[in-house]
Length: 261
Image 1 (cartoon, rainbow, N blue to C red):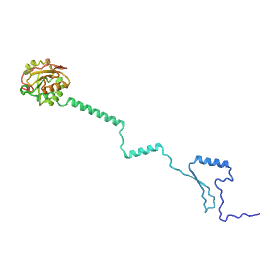
Image 2 (image 1 turned 60 degrees about the vertical axis):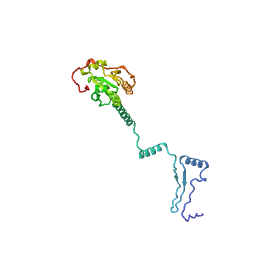
Image 3 (image 1 turned 90 degrees about the vertical axis):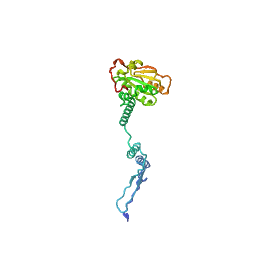
Image 4 (image 1 turned 90 degrees about the horizontal axis):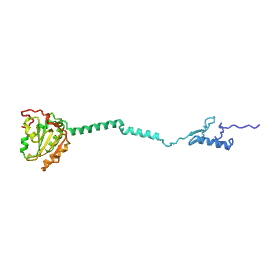
């Protein structure tokens, strides 16, 4: 019987992982198709350890290559970069609060400019020019008949003050209290039945027209402008609004400190 000589290096012979001698072509094809379908970019490597007496089996390593980045990953990265470098935008609640505060501030500014808080009927009556002086200085004159109890007079005081401040260098502004008996003759002369009553006089003291009661400021403003220019007539010569009746006068004799003489 013939003897088989052993391998002097004690190395076992191995067969390739896919050897055609023991595998049919169909089996080889199906095996290769299975591995290709379930693994991406497979790399098959076989390594033999010469120092070991055992047979090394082939190992498979799956190489992962970078693929396309998903949209969720992009959004996370973008959000992280924004949070780290840029300030956050205010939310809806903050915007609503800012809008409300701005609206309230605008309304307060409008009311303050319309009503001129701090300007009273007493202030403008004390600062008014005496009637006798107004008739002698050669300027046109606006005479207002008023009373302290007149609500409309108090309401229109800010408007009268604004017009007076604008034209006081060219037009006289006089205020006569209807409660003072000193002005009985003027009340009859100008036909005062309701207050506030504004009489517009030219440079010679002749009346060109009058405005009575609560009316828009433009009526007073346009009439005073016509006087300042020296025009022969005023645009609003006979206009009557809501007024306080002079029958409610609180007649008193004597010199009132705001009677201007």
